[in-house]
Amino acid sequence: MTAGENPVDPRLSQAYDRWTKAAAGVLAKSARVTPDELTDSPEALLSTPTRDGVVVRPLYTRKDEAAEPGVPGSFPFVRGADPVRDVTQGWRVTERFGDSTDQRDASAINESILDAAGNGTSGLWLTVDSRGPDSLSPEDLSSVLEGVYLDLMPVTLDAGADGIAAARAFLAVLAAAPAAPEQAAITAATTHSLGLSPYTAAFSGRPTVSASDAAALAAEAPEGVRTFRVDGADFAQAGASNAQELGLAVAAAVAHVRDAVAAGLDIAAALRQVTFAVSVDDDQFAGIAKLRALRTMWARVADVLGAAEAGAAVTHAVTDLAMFTQRDPWVNMLRSTVAAFGAGVGGADQVTVHTFDAAIPVDARTSRTSFTRRIARNTQLLLLEESNLGRVLDPAGGSWYVESLTAELAAAAWSVFADVEKQGGYRAALDAGDVAAQVSQALAAREDAVAHRTAAVTGVSEFPNLGEPRLGVGSADTDNLPTAAPTLARVARRFEALRDRADAAPTRPQVLMLPLGPIAEHNGRTTFVANLLAAGGIDVVNPGPLTPGEVAAAVEANPSTVTVLCGTKARYADDGAAAASAARTAGVGRLLVAGPEREWTADEAVDGHLKVGIDAVAVLTELLDALDPDTASTATAGA
Image (cartoon, rainbow, N blue to C red):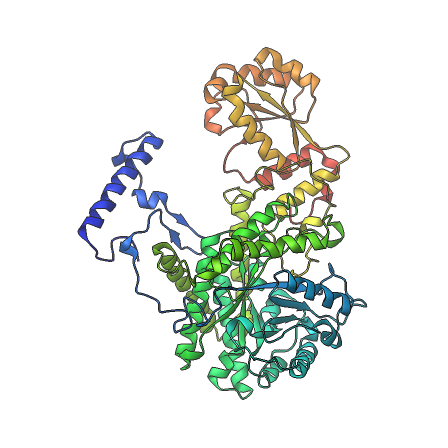
């Protein structure tokens, strides 16, 4: 739906017309044209397309009003899966235990779990892996879960190839657990997940179990336990867009339902054997819409299958590991807060916030695990107990923007799902390579936006800090991280690979800037150049305002393989040729200019331009090659 399709009070249309006229005036003034000379309507000029082709408009009004999507806990479940959600507790604060960052002894992990439960944790995500000498084995689960109220605290397993053994061990613990004096009703918030995700793991390469074994186990699962955990992170970490993550996750879930039906379950029971893990990043409105769109889609699947009442999607939102940075990792706290906000407002049943150092190789982390865990846990507790986000179900419901975004994202994701179904279902599309091709295409588009800095990464591609501790070459591309899939492609990794390379040089690469004219003239461009170069680990030398006659002395005092002239268009016209000639005479080999090519009108040739919109990764790679050619061979593939 676009503005104007929903007939409303004529006064609203008149108000919208007044806004359009005012916006046209502002846009025309900034472009130095008349409103009639604008290339498109103000709405189109101010709209932003997402990676899924969904257009986010600048203004939403009652013209965008949609029909009421029901109430939480009822079909079509847009507003939530749980009709009796505890608004005092809100979503479940789910913490992960058993990774390489933890003590691996079962009794020590049990102590950590009980301590976390006393400090606000209300859900568990357990790693089980019998392959390592210090890893938790399925037999350890009874000790790990001793004293845990399993009727109140949902457990999700992540056991990889040990999935079947771990699931059976957990079911035995659950069956042997003492009955509570007053048994709490099973809800979406207290549903356990055996964590089996063979289809999504088949895409990402994570260890898993066979789909047939998982389906056979689903036929035995008791009430309150779901077998399949369709993990959208397997797609998101590889670069999938939001619509692709949702569409592919629903396609994988439908494949599991078909397997479960073949194993003897009826349609409703098969639908109730699926839980969804959804990645959420620092786009809060996308996170809200993503969870609501997933519930919309799963309800539609259930309706088509003839079991609409079983279409309530149980969701576990997890902060997207791909958005986390190794450089300036403290910013990850802000990213996580925004992501958790989106997950909570979007109606996730459980939320897990990764620690802010989650992207750093485990052996390179400098913060205590107890501290990083506490920060991650308290991120959610502050949202729940200070901001009271859990006290209202679907607080974004009715927002013209959120409802429109939900519907449009659901439509885009349904198109992905329908395309997979046309190919014969998820397994056929995966085997044919279509799933990988789709995600690769989305990753390439995302990488291009990041490289050109139209998708900024704070602390990495924008506002980097060259004084940070150094990480080893290759750190940026590591996937040996808890919850990471082998296909992990972090957003920041290509810039961070350049930083790793520059940090490894005997002396940090430097570029000399030649600022022309007074500071008020060139400050914007010297700041831009310094920020751009620092994103690749390159430092700058700024000798201060120069005249053409002072350029040679500045070059002699600060010899560098690369030099950048910084000034305004008018200053280039007046002093550019003389300054460039002086720099060349003083021995400068590679001379760049800050600003676009059209502003350099001097006859003196230069070797390139540093400007907004360039492929910063490619340019910075070339500069590092020029500044320190001996390290060119050490650049990682990701760079």
